[in-house]
Length: 301
Image 1: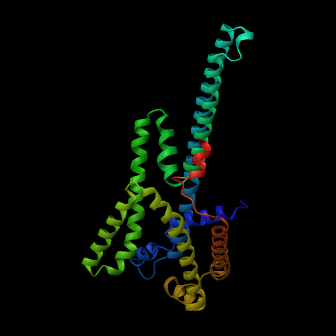
Image 2: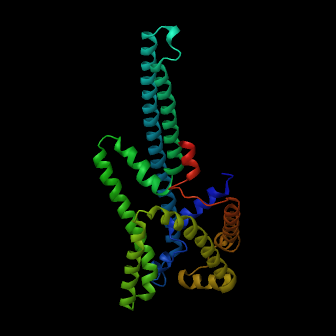
Image 3: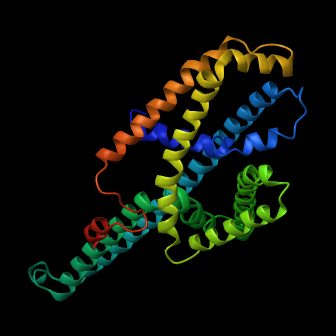
């Protein structure tokens, strides 16, 4: 919890799950009536979003626990096999002829090789398959493969991923298409452009492009955009004018909690996260890709 990167990742996840900074919430809210109770809806959406995140974390760490237990049992069986093989060799050899025996040398080579393979597997899992595409398509897939009724869980899981991706893109694309709704040609061009951009992520180098967009195009820009939105509403447009607009729509002004969060807490948190991100980026050294880390690969070899 003392690591700023943890809070940066958490904030980015909230931005993605709530659609903050993308314009999707503004696009959807533009279809509401003038007197719609958006205050109540904002609270409900936030609670549902947090509850969904907690539920998803329970499922995620349950999958981690299942996979860890399965890997531990698998490694234990390998070690038991090696120990049985060693005892069998030692019983068939005299203690004086063990040193220099080619079978013993082969056994020791097998033990060392097996340990390096296990070490490589553990490093590979810890560095590549704990977030993003690694979590979704490697950790979950391997865990589901070893569950009872694996075919059923696999179908349900990937249908869920498909619907999740479609739902996310519908909100993001709606934010762009809504202002262009009166010009049908431009709306279709937006969808065509998204399709063409999506082809890059399905190529052999797609994971590299995904890492670039995820690490540099999404996090920093979202922090900056949301920070500017809060500053613009509270200090450029004016908090009092914003309160009068809310009173005109809801019939009452927002209470002190909303005003404190808008004017003080949210700008400070966003600005702090933005500074932490810049400092972490400067101190992080040369950027690396999760898909390929040359130094880590050489260490494993």
